[in-house]
Image (cartoon, rainbow, N blue to C red; front, side):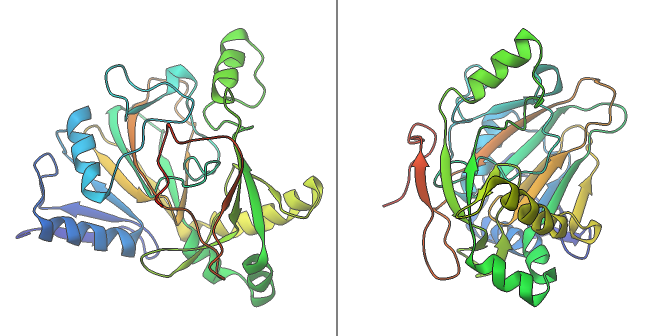
Length: 298
């Protein structure tokens, strides 16, 4: 682990990691240091990584078993664990979300690797949902502690909501080809740190026990704490970078501000556990079997 440097990017989220070559197998001391840094900083940025798809997967495996690319969206040809995030394929994820929360056990962490970067724009915003929870006034915090939300893939972050042409409609049909609904705690307890974080985002569509209208108003209030500027890392991509973020306690947003120029990242996600609320109750599946995407530990 000699020479590794972890430098904070903002007060509440993000660190830049240098002094380690993640294209090579990591010794256990280095892997542990990176896991610990992820717990503290929520998002880690690596530059000049010199990775291909195989190398990205090998690095991600230091954090756990991999998921397949996505429950419904096709993977990169020949790489079933790699999801192309491509502006030309309608996959500009320009709304706040946590990856794949509509399944029972969403990924514990995600890696994004830059391949093609526009000359301007195209940043990824990553929010610390634990900081958001800490920001809540006590009355809102007590309320959030008791709430559960239904997450669904009815709304695809990778497809515009107003799908009007045939290509967009086909992408939306593919994304919802298996429909998922899962109930998760609005306040999730991180399994390693014990921190509480707001576990909501774009796939959270309804609060259990409330109407759609009531749910939307309450979710919007809670979400406003997640997206406070103080809780955000705004990452401006360079080529040959990798960003690793903790999917259990962050949300992210791809800023669509690059005039439709080519932008391509590859995503590899690490299998996670079933979320748990503050009283120890686990999430439950309402609709959809995602066992082909990620296994659920017994």
